[in-house]
Image 1 (spheres, rainbow, N blue to C red):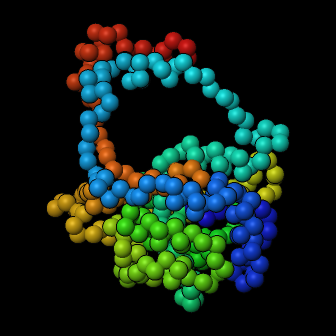
Image 2: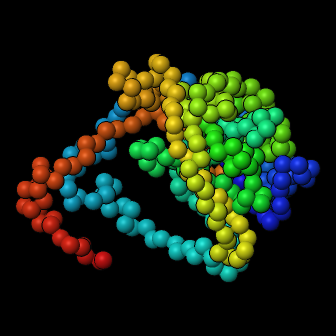
Image 3: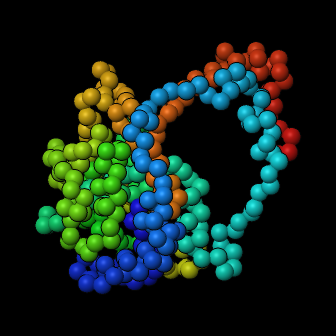
Length: 309
């Protein structure tokens, strides 16, 4: 999950750009382990036998109005109130808090190329999601403003196109390698060892190993300014329109409407340097008012608001 912090202006031809990224990453302190190799060695091996499967929900017999399924245990705990702008609270504290709380997050593995076509870029971004289907729209969030833009944002702003690829278990390590803070012009494709595949409507490559990929055109951008330090640009939101989808044939249903999670094996981002895998799910039908209205009325659940509001 690439990120920039600070006001240093970073440009493609700036020889200090890579050093600035290294300094920024050290300042973030995303890795909490002084000796990660030792910590990793103490952990169990990856469980290859753990595959996608369905389970029942926790309470298959839950009824409207019942509330949480934990018997009230969560109500026994108090909450800590945090003002993100309180005196002395660094913005980086909010960053660490948010990426550990808003989980799991989809990872957009974004491929771009420079305007002159002489260099290509590949990087994972966990500030990514789909926000609309007609037209298909996706968000990508970049830390840092345009003046210190990451390579992906620089290329996207210049060429107005990219591909968004979904990361699966079978190329997790390679995708993580693409988050390296390499100098502009050094392609993460070579460092990751992943395979570029041609697209139809954009010039940048998609990841051949990816089960699902999107060819995208830049729809709009919005730059954000710090509340704590007025004038400092701290982020950019890019909205990308999907103009073509690519799905691996064995993951797609006959109607071409569903991707099989048992084939996709998607990876997500958690806090710090953690990734999450999706190995099980449950199905719960969305309630229908016409079918549930009698039950709602009988149980006295028709209210404009509830106690405590």
